[in-house]
Image (cartoon, rainbow, N blue to C red; front, side, top):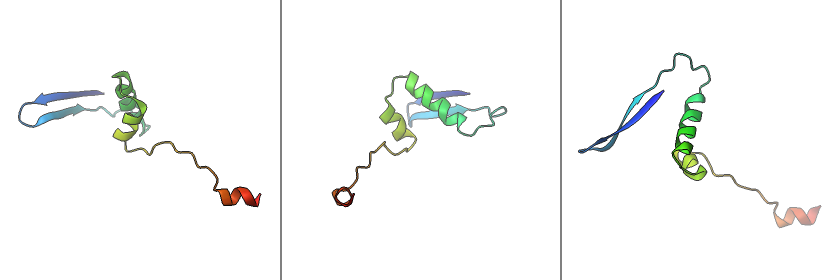
Length: 70
């Protein structure tokens, strides 16, 4: 896979993308490769999750009403 972002004076940044999927049998392999590329370029985990529209990790605490019942 080769991904190049080429700077275009008129339109800002225009991606030129070449992806070879001949041997890709696992659909998430593309996402995993892009996540790794972003990580290697120095982006943090929250930025990478935002790029792929993933929800942030949350912790669910039991409500006080449920604690009183037990």
